[in-house]
Image 1 (cartoon, rainbow, N blue to C red):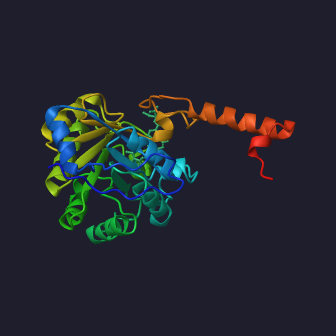
Image 2 (cartoon, rainbow, N blue to C red; image 1 turned 90 degrees about the vertical axis):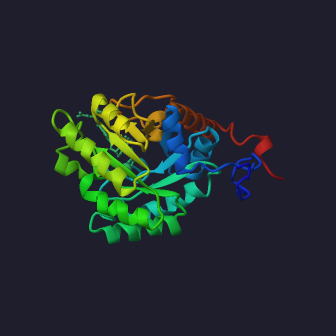
Length: 286
Ligand SMILES: Nc1nc(=O)c2c([nH]1)NC[C@@H]1CN(c3ccc(C(=O)N[C@@H](CCC(=O)O)C(=O)O)cc3)CN21
Ligand SMILES: CC(C)C(=O)C(=O)O
Ligand SMILES: [Mg+2]
């Protein structure tokens, strides 16, 4: 029980801190947190510096989201992003964390075709990306996909409620599971648990429905716009840190003004180059 997981030496750009032995977060730890009633945080990450900062800050689960479509690649929805685009981001994040459990989000079109396609894509993210788990969107109809991946030994996180990859079928960015549709969401969540999912994201779901699902499931629920009674909460890091200057969804809280800090730094750098103050003597080789 006291054994430590050996950790690779950090890369030259790994910014300083000596690697320490770290106990990897495992899916059973997340269920133990649920049993103890301790809520836990999850953030997205798409590159080394952000992943390392969040890992060191004690975020137990990092998601390489298909939201990279918006936050990294500049698409206006998550639909266009590909496995080939996400794979290097997953590799960058998994190589950079010591403790966090890294979940690779399966992009649109890479798993919906069949359980076989879902398993093939999941294996790519585990083998080439060295992810620790995968996530896919969908309820009951995707239970066979979840089951196929889980049977191969790969942990799967579900995602129901507002599922951005189904934006056009759902009629836009809107709350799901109001009224009678709440029962459908409960059935979806139970089906995913039955299929072997280790956790399920609830996105833009009425708080009362999320509370009901959280009480009925033994696996953790991870809310985003799903109220305070979920077992965990997830946000896109650029929303959380105020890197995203655009209009944020109502479920976002901004904990910093990273965009302001970067903008100020870039502006000062520009002014000092234009004014001749940078580089100074201490930055020059002779
Ligand atoms: N930066 C970012 N943050 C996210 O949370 C996020 C992404 N990108 N990309 C993938 C999906 C898309 N998500 C989104 C994006 C926008 C809204 C949004 O505009 N919501 C509005 C309207 C809600 C309504 O009409 O009821 C809101 O005010 O919450 C919601 C979820 C969540 N994910
Ligand atoms: C918002 C989270 C749950 C997500 O799926 C993503 O970032 O792609
Ligand atoms: Mg996603």
